[in-house]
Length: 248
Image 1 (spheres, rainbow, N blue to C red):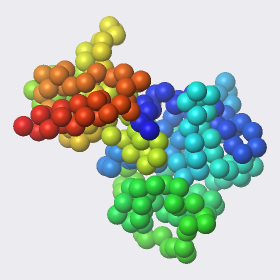
Image 2: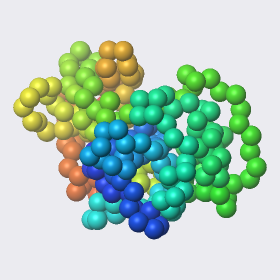
Image 3: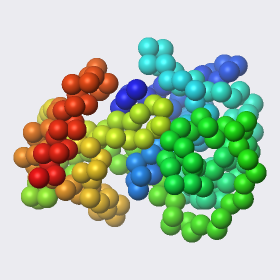
Image 4: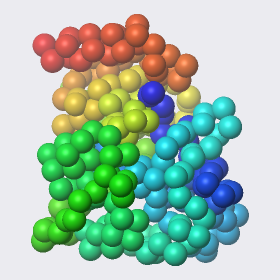
């Protein structure tokens, strides 16, 4: 199922034995556009509350109607997990500790989205063999916050500027396939045009700028964002067609 990330922000975290806060942010890898963690705030009215990271490996279902992200772990398991400060960089050392704590297989050990598979569920403990962690530089962990990136300027290849608004991901693989771009950068609300993330040429973190490989005319000609159509066959066919046309 395809769903936009902004929709799940604020969703309740439902564990196997109760509730544990809400989703306050999402961390994704900009190199392969895969969501790696949900940032969970156990006390959304308390800005000093300890945030925790939940891997999609722990998620077995997203209940859209109930606005819940359902986990396969309990509250005590989350509370005892290695913690990280809200603005601290997620290092490979921290990830290794977190994954060892949960008994998960490492998603970075293999060529697929989640190690040897595109399904994060296969990294749960009963599927995991003994593993070691290779030495990887801090710069090789390209995780970024959705709250940070949504709002960046988007520059097309004809030097027109728009604004990043949202991303759309698949709830099975957690792969981000599309991005929603505000057609006009400014105070006035406008239609959001969808692009395949393959159209993104570069992220410039210093300038808070995302460069596209398509023109503004091509962007505006793409399908517009409608959440109820994200899983329809006509929509998916139009996105494939627009990607083909944009490559010409």
